Length: 69
Image (cartoon, rainbow, N blue to C red; front, side, top):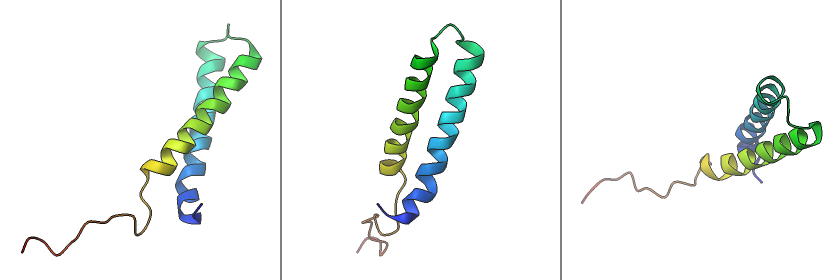
């Protein structure tokens, strides 16, 4: 993986994990702790994978900027 993509992927994963823990603790307290942990881990990993593929990297765009001929 490129280091430039890590600049976006890691913060997205951390923000999703913090939001997941906050929401599960405050709004869904009846969910058992082990399942809350699994939900948080899956949410963080899933958001990391999506961010890796959706955030463009330098040189990924194959658009020709010269315009029409």
